[in-house]
Structures are given as C-alpha cells and as structure tokens.
Length: 157
Length: 104
Image (cartoon, rainbow over all chains, first blue to last red; front, side):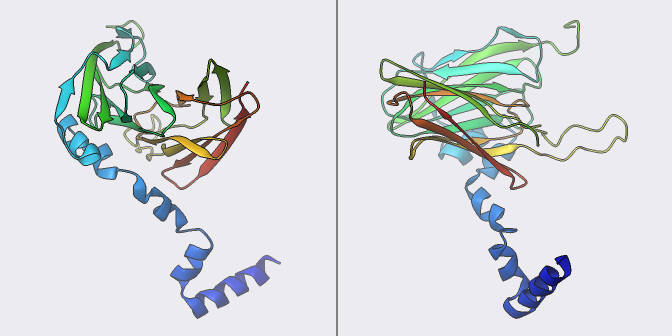
C-alpha cells in the first residue's frame, strides 16, 4: 500500500515538478505561513535595531502610562514573569524586550480591535537588566523599563 | 509534543480575561547538550493567534526568549459565557497546535 502511494507521488513529481507537489502536500507551506515572522527584528543584537526592524523606528517616549510588572529579583532567569499593562487609547501593539539578552526582542503582541493593552507572559533573561516594554500607538511609541535582578545558580551568587 | 494548550477564560463586567498555558520546549538554539556538547537546535513557537468566536483578538510573534511551556494572558472587551476562545500556535519547524475553550 505504501509502495502504491510512493509510486503515485513519484509519478506526480515527475509530472508536475517536485516543488509543486511538495507545496501541494504542505511540506513547503510552513515557509509561507512564517513569512510574517519578523526575523530581522528577533535576530537584532541591540534594542534600537530590533525596534527599527519591528516597528519602523526606535524613537520612543518614556511614559508612566506603560506599566510593567516584573519581579525585582528573579530567582530563575529562565522563567521571569512579566506583565505589561496600560490604559492608553489606540494601542496597536506591545513589545517586550530584555535589554541584557544577546537578542533583546522577546515578543511582540498585535492587539485586535477589541483587545485591551494588557499582556502577561514569562520570559528568559540572560542576566540582570532592564525589561523594556514598548507600546505602539497612532502617535508614536511609548515605553517604560523595569530593572530585574537575575540570580543564576542555586544560591543566587 | 505532548499535552494540549490549557485555556481558562472568564468574563467579568464586559471584559474577558484569558489565561493560556502552552506545552513547548522553546529551545533558543543557544544551549549545548551537556553530554555530547552539540548545540541543541532552535525550536520555539513563532506565532500565536488568539480568537474569540471568529474574531482575531490578538496575534503574537515570539522568539526563543519566551520561557519553556509558555504562559500567556490577555484581555479583551466583549465575550460572554459559552463563547469560544481559540489559541493556535505555529513553531519554527512548521508544527502547529490549536486549543479551544469556552468562556466561563
């Protein structure tokens, strides 16, 4: 039974071209799906480049309207809970950045029309650094930062 | 890749709060296997799409910097008990998973 399918697949490949069949079979489909993933931004090694690649600019205005909840001291740098919240009108997206990581951009959340500017997740932090939240609005980027101490290793030394 | 996404969604005063726990190794691609010294390849959720009934309320793009077994919480205006919340993710290898739950 498997042979029959293989024969059919190979026949089809010769006929329509292997690439065409692969796409049809969904093997190459993931590439198309992932085209939207902002690879350059996530591979950027500094915050400014990451923001420019993600949002088109790195010009941010520090604002207390961007509230970051994160522990003062994170016992485990692999799991640092971060919540970003705001009551800003017209927030379009929220980005979370760990300034001390090799690639600082951690996550970006695009808010649908009914979503509130609120996200909570857990991130990895390489070392003690600022967690930066950037909220994109119609009029520009608002940001804030919270310093989180990371104690690596059991005894925190 | 084991268990499904766990979702809890509750509606209070016209605002629905969704809490989800996804099951995923979230490898950054920077770790080395302690035994062999080989780099463990990057394997992490890249995109998450959250829907309320048929409406997309939030999409997220992630890196390997999100912790293993990702937790995600978000809120939106609307939602009533019985409505469906759907959370779907796709990882960098093209694997995807979808979980659904009803708003309580």
